[in-house]
Structures are given as C-alpha cells and as structure tokens.
Length: 126
Image (tube, rainbow, N blue to C red; front, top):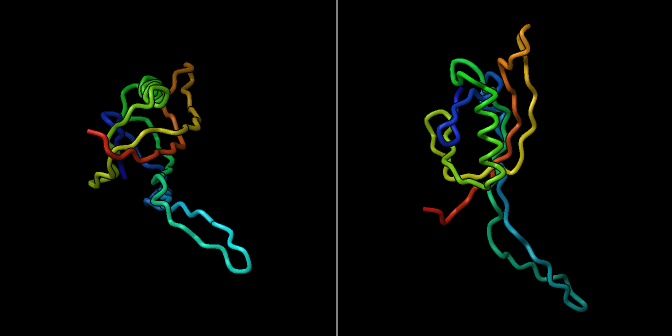
C-alpha cells in the first residue's frame, strides 16, 4: 500500500493497512455538583490523529534522505499538506512527530528510511 503527504510519496509499512492507527475523541468537562453525580459537558471534538509506519525508498523515492529532511522541515514549519493513503484522501494534516530508522548500503549511503509518523488533522484551512 502506498501513501503521500503533499508531494512526498511513501510505502506504508506492513502487508496490510493494520499498521495505520486513527484516534478520534471528544473533549468532556466534568462539573462537580454537591450531593449528586457530576455533570458531564461535551465541549467538542478532539483533533483527529493518524499514526503510521512508512518506508521512504525506491520506487517511491529517488533520494530517501532528502525526502526525510523535507518531512522534518514540513514538521518544523507546521506546514499543512494533504494526506493520501491508497486512493483515499484523508484531508489536511500537519506532522506532530517523526521517529526514524535508516538502512545504509555498503558505501554508507541511505537506501531506505523507515519512519513512524504522527499526523494531526487541521481544519478550516484553504
């Protein structure tokens, strides 16, 4: 399975999309009341999070190290890009964090980067 964040393409790690974790939630505020149960107030949705392990390598990337550096720049700039997984457009996301593991060839060049990336959905963006 493949995906893309902006124009950076990658392979999703694993044989099937079970390695993609999506978190949804709602914010709940508890108001204590004397001599009874608390009142729970729903204050809205939390930010949708998608976390997945991706491979940045051939045939999706001619230079995995450069694509990884670009992902880090996008994260540091809090850029918002479109996240696509397979043929589904998930929406606009920013990167919260990245964990990286690189594989090198015998010449010391990076040939593959495996990264665990956590994306946060951004709404109300043009």
